[in-house]
Length: 109
Image (cartoon, rainbow, N blue to C red):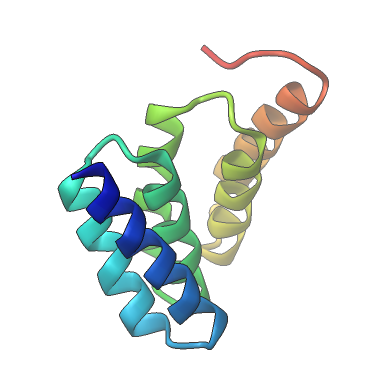
């Protein structure tokens, strides 16, 4: 199952690289169906959704990624950007603070 997930993830990354967001999103979703705790899949899904203009689903995917790995600085930074895109400035600032804490070597939760 892990090998299938990883192959799908690699394929999705290739789709993303050539601008095929729909295919990438579909494959990232299949990755997390195979492994609901796959942090990289959730994070990548969130970023692909953001690029495709699907802001609220992107936020949901990023939040799931923060649940799996609350100490990843990049996912908090991405979540902050997603909240800004959705007009949720207070939430964006909180996510940005979490990213800053991690950038200074701290931990979340």
